Length: 455
Image 1 (cartoon, rainbow, N blue to C red):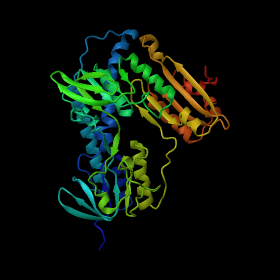
Image 2: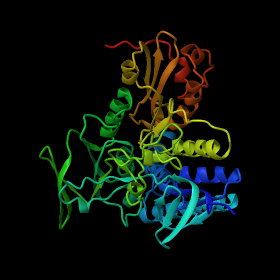
Image 3: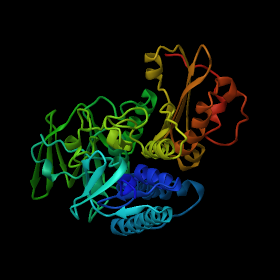
Image 4: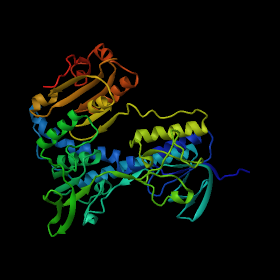
């Protein structure tokens, strides 16, 4: 008779937790997973996937406008927000069913309840008030949108979670924040014809990205009619007969139909019973773990956004895979957090891998910088005044490529391939020796020859 009900109990059915459960079960482990909401987690249900579907929808306005330059006469167009949301919901439901089927096919037992720790080797299903034991417990509960409760009237705001389920498209929206989510939703709403304002506490949007990309996006958003207010925050929000009025710290007042907070996400650790078991957490509630994803309690592990390391879905998936291989597969390995590619699905799109110019300098490198700023071929006939930016950050001593950065159409697709080169340690000479694929935007990465010098 086995000592525990299961070998592994996973709390959280997002991408990381599901990957860990499936891989562990593939090694013959008896695995259970608890998810109180819907399988798929933030990325599939209320994050990356539905967001990108909305991004696609928002870009059709550009396509209709640009078509005239290529000889097309586009008639009257009409957008139906409700129809888009219904289509999005159908796709999300399909993806959730795929997640469920894959778990069931792998032999994972699914509990549709909230779970909390009841001991080092026990969890309580709160919906059933039932305790289940497991040799190992993996916490993969992700993160949740942050709302600044110090703002008077904060109960009137929505978050990205709510934006996916709005009954109607607002005529005016104000978005607080300057990171991925704020920038992406600003592009979505503006593309759908909404009067859009971004309110950010810093100097420029997208802190941590290369400065050339930040500057390029600010310029592009201004041309698209997105109002960007920097060095400001909301301090009061009031509901009026005509909508909402937000008072900012700089004295500005903004009228909007919706005010959205996209000011970050916090580790989803509330009500997990961590303190009862003694699991160590950081100041933001993040679970502290070692390089093998183990907490200070030997039987309890954590992966993904709940640990507040590199908060990206593919990273959580790799962490889940590494955990399962290490603990159940006898094939220990650790996630390499260098050269993780990332994209911001703004319009125009941003993607990057490796070090920014400022980060490379801070790390002590002497640099050669290569830049290209050009009008994409499609924009020549359409007449659209929007530039693509590409940039290589190169270690002057070894000529190894330290970073590749892009703003423009298909940036994410291009940088994904560049990430392979960086992971293999490619040098500028390797890029130079690569035959260009013409005509394409990506060919600029292998044809840049002149080093950039500050003016």
